[in-house]
Amino acid sequence: MKKSLAVLILLMTMSCVSTKYNVYETPNNFTNIQVGNKYTIYNLKNHKFFIDVNSVTNDSIIGSHKNQRIALAKKDIKEIKKNKTGATVALIGGSVAIIGGIWIVTNILKDLNHAFGKVLGG
Image (cartoon, rainbow, N blue to C red):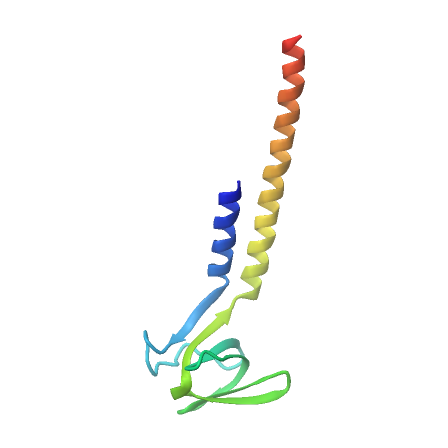
């Protein structure tokens, strides 16, 4: 049970984010970045920025976070990731339901086994 829970947590963390840009895989290819979406952007020094993208220009990505304007030069961006909040909520909700269901069925089977053991055992 503990191993399956660990695998489930690992699956949840990996499936909740998708990489839209990586300097090592697709240098200077920002075609997947869409205006109006929220992204987590890492610069070359591994500083993390949460940005609602307002525009993508030839040399920078401009957006905002908590009503503060942020402009990042494309040459300084190492990686851009998009969080999938809806998928995360659905995955966690489904996982909790499955784990709860397994726990309930296991307890019912234990009670039945205990009851039948008393009846058959004397």
